Structure formats: structure tokens, C-alpha cells
Image 1: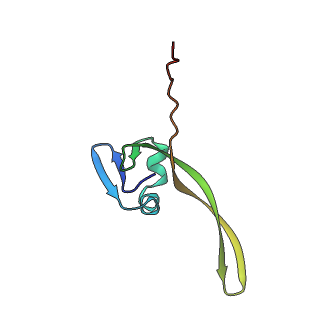
Image 2: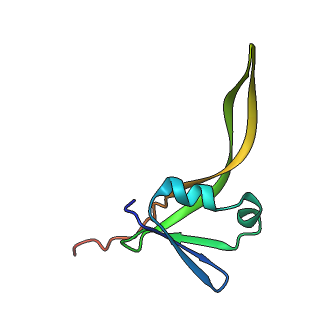
Image 3: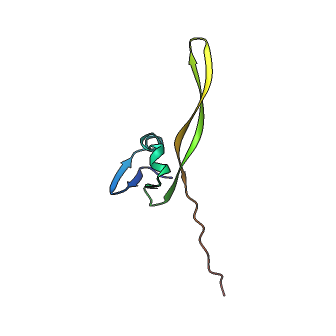
Length: 86
């Protein structure tokens, strides 16, 4: 996956310099409505999905783990059929 990342959302196109920036920009409810499509700089289609992430939180002497939904971007592996040599 080569940045920049290009997001197509309805009729809007946005370009983001890094994957981390793109994941922070995208909202979970947009992906649940299936309205976003993403490409990298080489035109490779990217897979956008929602996953749960756990983060340890601290306040003074208290510690706890918070779980929340976030957007994850991965490369989409497409299978292509190859013709056999005859």
C-alpha cells in the first residue's frame, strides 16, 4: 500500500498523506453505510472495515481497558484467473 490514499465518498474525493491519517479521518458510521471506496497511489483497491480496538487508559492510580470501534485499512487481494499455456 503506497500513500497517498484516495477516498471516494459519494461525489467527493479526498487525498490523505498516510494510512494513519486516513483511518483517523474516516467515520465508522460511513463505513457501515458502505459509501466509501479507497485506493492507494498506484490504483490498488483498498479494503475498509470496522474493527474493535482495546486501549489501556490511566487516570492517577486507576487503570482500565477501553474498547471502541475504529476504521482499519488493508490491501484488498484480488484473485485473477490465469490462462494455461496450451
